[in-house]
Image (cartoon, rainbow, N blue to C red; front, side, top):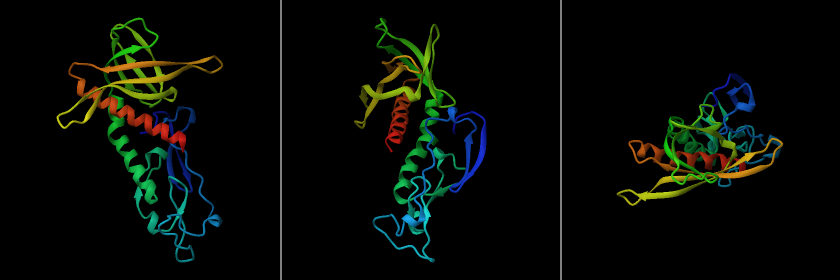
Length: 235
């Protein structure tokens, strides 16, 4: 689930974690463990609807996702937390449990779609070709870049961490009236590491062939992936 580099088993106060040996190849979908709020700074449960006082019988328990302290009742649910690489299910508060459920749906379903890839017509803002060219786009196995495989030409991969925005640029409606994405535009930075930086835009339109449904699913999954990473940076 995490990046494909060599792994090691580590123990923290939150539990056992299976992490990459080299942090530089860690999946961009991963989160660092939060700092726990010290016990002496937490006199009552931090659930605003509870706020029961802690004592010898009513002990403090920390949510493994946010690090805040709660009573046992408010952290009774245990759930796997793949974004922090925990081996076993861990305690969650009532707010974090819902966030993790949505993220786990991404890991269970949408991540596989991104890894499998799909065929798109690719058009770049710095290209003179108005027709574009078909490439198979997929997320790399370490989750760190988008790879493009073409029959007649090559395109450099795009590091996921360099993507600044993801936007639907074409859509259609299904029989129920739901809008379905058939094209996507991604703005990403180029350069850096001592050189000047710039931004480029790549437009990807779903292929009209047999992989059309797969391409639309890929676009939806990419939106979810970008939002998850973007929201993490804001936390």
